[in-house]
Length: 297
Image (cartoon, rainbow, N blue to C red; front, side, top):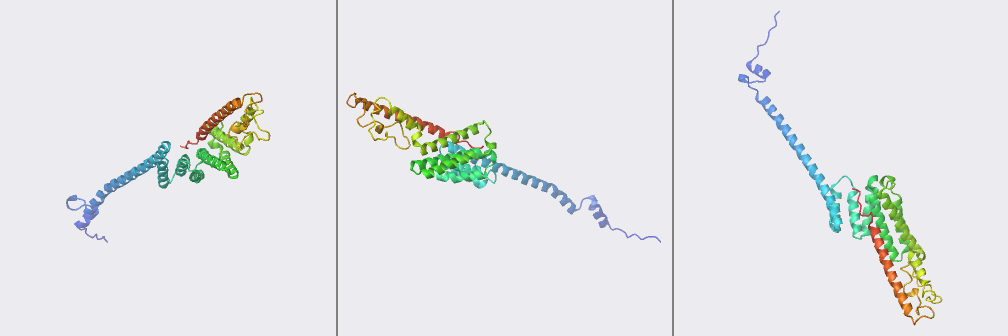
């Protein structure tokens, strides 16, 4: 039995072929083809915009860090702090750099009570390779706080701060202070300075000032220049060689003129004391600035 085939209409043939009268595409198919390239253009523009925003974001972070460092070097610590704060707010990466810059700027401004917590927070966030620079600045702050306590005659707190400075330096990982490197040498010098300052505070009679004072006192006009029962005139802390009370009130040695040689000797000792103190201050100033301005980037 023959199969009966249903006749197809012209409209069905056109839909099957995807064309209308005269072989033209249907409206639906033509619209779909036009939409494809338009979507590609839109996606490309969105991707390009995102890349531009990311680049601008990275440039902004770099500018903020550079501004903080330049402002701090120029002495404008408040501007440095503001730029570092903005970096900390905006950057999800390198989180230690914000508090490190803030703490360093506060230290340069001698606000050690505000610098210390910032640098401690930076130390918690910093990678191992960057620890030494953070530790150097934090140790510097502890050292300066110890000196302030020492000057206020609070020896207990001064010792606590000196110990904290030494601990911060000694616990530095080997990765950040390779043997014989510049960073290792700077940290060794900082440790020696802390030890020397603490030893001088706790044992003032053994400092260089006491030795020089005793040497001058035994020289010409010094053997009999000290009154019986006098302690030599050396103050705790060893400010210098003897000073005014290092020689007796009468001055001079037996058989010399009426105090003339003694007066000259006291003036010479005062001048030497001033020169010695000035040299010590200059050395301390150079030592205090060595290494502490370095940053881990």
